[in-house]
Length: 181
Image 1 (cartoon, helix red, strand yellow):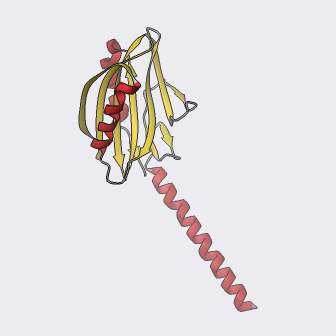
Image 2 (cartoon, rainbow, N blue to C red):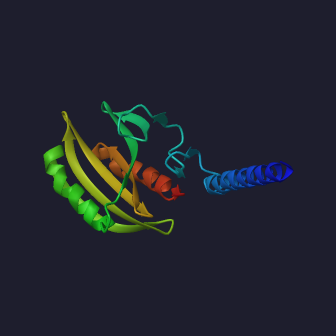
Image 3 (cartoon, rainbow, N blue to C red):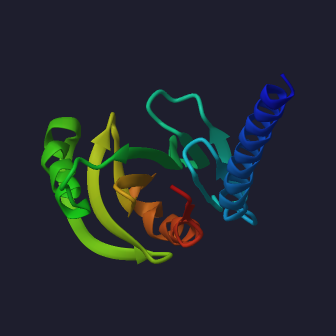
């Protein structure tokens, strides 16, 4: 009986140690997000959104949205989503599929540009388009950041007259992105 007790005690101690080690490993990963004003431990990323912008997590299919100033009845915003790349799919091919789908999604869609980027040593790709949303024309910059077969997608939208000004603010936020997948 004593032998069984010591075996059960040993197994329990081992499981407790492994559980604590898992917690510590998770803490190490979350520590990588320290210093960032927005952290999402569920999706494993963080960054510094523009100061003073409102956070909204209630939009279906969106992880988080940051709403900036409203100009001419249109809010300047950043929307964050994430997705898994298909096996063998590249960031470039995922962006090509997105671009191909835009004419079916947006009214008066115009392609502006696309380019590869590196953000904090992570492979990234950017698409810039213009389209109508209701009666308002919107300029949109989508940045996909790939890490370990997943893509974090940050979409910045503004009316064309304000795009360049707030694109600088969006760029500062992009440069702070950290992913812990």
